[in-house]
Image 1 (cartoon, rainbow over the protein chains, first blue to last red):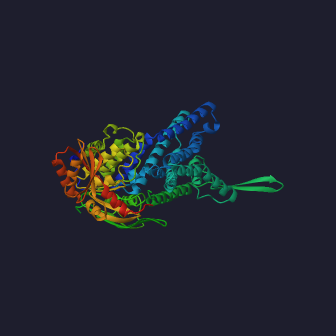
Image 2: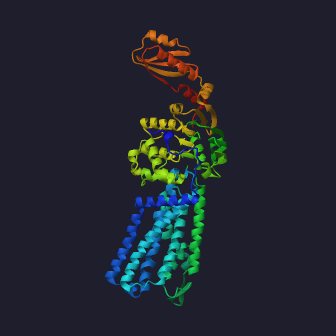
Image 3: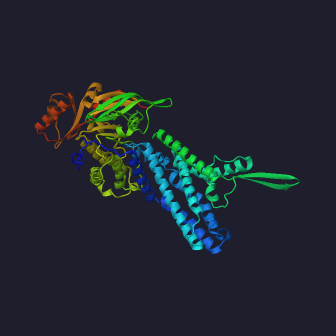
Length: 291
Length: 314
């Protein structure tokens, strides 16, 4: 047995705990290690690659005109339809149980009882989720661009870079929201299910009901704001309000209204979601007790 | 501040109408091991959780070295380490990685990190598992890693919440030895337990709590003297059978109240006078050259004290 008296450090020397920012990045580093080790990253990467491979195969085999008429329509069809789905999956994979898991699995007792602020834990984990998701998106886009270069040469439309920038903000907002729900629940299953339901079903449904049936602009729905990621590929950018009048016969008509978020509006909504949900999530996590 | 100090000031924790902790006032200072005894639900873990900011008090203050844990957790815990319940370690991490995480958070210099991790892992006898994933470990093995993690950074104050929980008898004995070795340095150890023999074996002082209220606090001897109504006792083992004449010789030793034969080579001796008396009896028995090979004091008095103070549990 090693006598504790022989240990290198004099216990009476001043203990220098790293600053909160340093501790935040320590949490980020080990959280990323945890993602890579627990195969979460690998599974999501495989899903992203499957989507890429399917699109590569389908476009290569069927040569659809909707994709191959121009480089803009190619990137619109590829990125515009898939990227938001990958972002939502990333939020579910990396953010869904990020905080709730600390309570449910009791791993929080291992970290939170140390001399570290809870905000450093929360933010460190959030940054790790963001980096992991960003890597998935970059790999997805790299394969997309490789396909685009094959069909249209090296001239990548600037709209792709705009879409990437919007996607990064959308990712931040969706992760912020996922983390907020994760800090609300003690059960990982609940927080993941709520995130899945909200982003894959509820928001889209509410957006449809509010805009088409009630005729109100759904400016408060984050998926509405994400429309700018696909709309950026449309030239000119779609009008803010589109009213369609359908003649039903016998003099009867049905008027439906479709809203498209403007770029500035979309960016503000995403930024608002990110800031508010992150602050709320942090607040909840600060107040939560490890019972 | 040179001395290690843990202080609870009117510490209260309520969950709705249930009071888990009621105006707890406790001041522990110096270098020693203080046992925190009480039945399940008495408020032991609640107290330790408040001291590590895992939960917050409804009122009152938890201070470590003069710093309020709730208002400045980082500073308060900078020289304090804790093992609360049985934390889970990220299962995909190895022991080395999990302890590196703690070492980095505690600011252990890079040059000392590896050696310190290897030393604390050796201390809990987990060296062979250093690079294995924690996810495959038994509860007892995880608890050893958790104990190792509390030693990282050589904190002066260590809070242990039932540290032998989940360990097999051998593991329990080893953890007790670790805690005893920790006492050799200038450390203040505050250890909750409901195992009386564990506290009697390891701790210098004892604080007893029930229904969220502190019932007694002081040196073990002082508390048992004050609250126990029974005599001290010890079991003496001999290499050869004890006959009636030897039995009566033992009975005549000063301060011995009674001698009860357990089997042909073992007797239970009840005595008065505490540690000094125990020392004298042991020396006398050894001097009698009657084949004394073992002498183990039992925790009867502490048990009696406990039962007298804690009349009923939840």
